[in-house]
Image 1 (cartoon, helix red, strand yellow):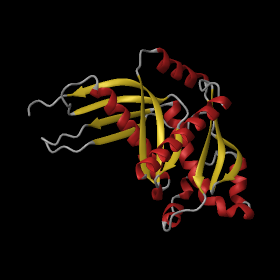
Image 2 (cartoon, rainbow, N blue to C red):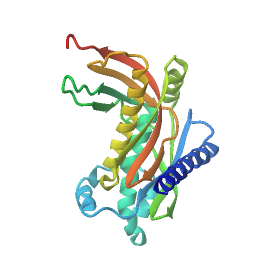
Image 3 (cartoon, rainbow, N blue to C red):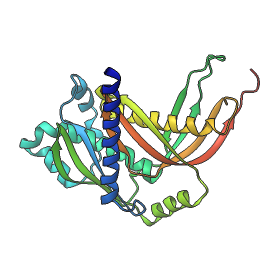
Image 4 (cartoon, helix red, strand yellow):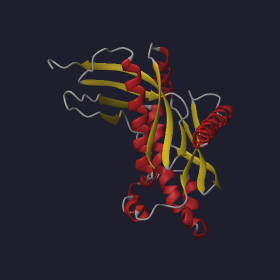
Length: 253
């Protein structure tokens, strides 16, 4: 009985993710010029998380859309200020991954050498110098979540970058990752890094027989990210274009 319930929950969660993907694709037929996707954040913070994160709120981007800023300033919307702050962290992180991508360095685990699995990522470029800015619109509350639409229009140069990624013979990889719900934005970032790690590991296992010392490369998010919650954790599904870097082998055992 427990197995059937567990299987039903897994199927239900998978179905929700599939429906989300189809609904997003239906409203955003192309990502080449204009990026548009829904984003959400929990209205209620975990104890101690608000105080910790409010200390760094002064770093928020001043160029965010007026609609979200007004919602944050209005007294009647003050209960949503925490969620709005998280949205303003999550959205730029994902948009930068879709516009410029990430560099990564991946070290596979090796029990014989007592090496732990490690993935490090670095943003290739920030959006600060871009003439186009991220905007937010059509905010709504659903299931104790603050939701809104995120929009970003690529510049001509950024469109050229995307077309370059898609035209070159770059393989497509996909990964699913998990992160702690109680960590807020950091949990989503950890889930994204976990998704990239799983995607890279699965791809290179098909190409490399012996575990390498390090794998480097670059990725660009090529589809709308799918973000959800499963068993008290954030879960995110990311699709990437992969640009090969270097593979460092161990010189000896």
